Image (cartoon, rainbow, N blue to C red):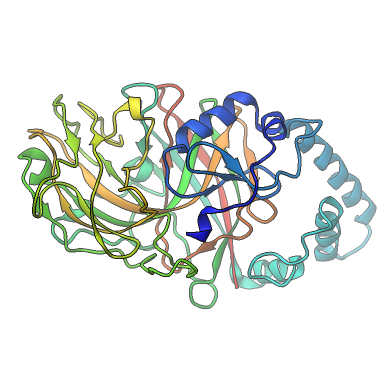
Length: 404
């Protein structure tokens, strides 16, 4: 449970000046009901969106300027230093000097001994860059969330999960995954940075590792109690200090192929025995999932949660901080037509786009991620967090990772 403590509250005025009041409020609304800290991209320092909607950790900017103003200042400094070094054939040395000029305190970063070690790893075959471009679909209402797994683009659309009870434990080789490669020793990949652009202002994406998916089938269409026996292969440790700790694992119902009938329904009908939505928590104990209200006529690509909940994940029982596996599924009412997959994922980070059609560079080296681990065979994908508009949004960018 110690991982829930990320230090003192973030200076609210500085965070507002850096991201803008609207963006801060939107991220707070999107994450307030989540039960585990999520690193906040694009904010220098170590800032986390916390359970309850607050922010914790140190912010290193925002005293006198906005994110855009600070970016101009940083670029001006970098260009000046590049010009001064232009006659020297020491590219890596120049990069080191520029980085240290902006922050002299971070010489050791995460699992790497120094910035030099990060650069050496990236430039010696342990770095990778992954392009992505995804086109979402229109939401039914403001506040809905969308799963980009089955959407067209690069990577190509992923498939629905296998039927219960087995389901699917996807990997980096699964169609639809971003294409992460295992370039270092076992489980030593790390997020480095990404550039993200969105066609609609103030939309946000969650980068996550998709670790399990199972098709509901009769659990939805006939409201039949349905057992699940398949389990994820990553993030399965019950030890809170372990890198693959279950804490933070979340699940959500998403529509992969066919629009749902306009039938009111929820997930978590409860009751004695194996009835309703049941999961194993971080201690491998069986728990009943609290009620999650579904979305009538949920569109293809939509997450089956009513917009009024501003939610992209299913709630867990009080005190639980992660889901190890699903063991049972059931809708409260028979939804005669449509498809739903129940998916388990592990969050990597949130990236917000405060400006439409402009590439925003977010850094995992100096900001709150600090080279967060990405496990071997990770099935990286994106969730569109509760939308500020119903408009279908196109996303594109470049994700960089480095391995030890």
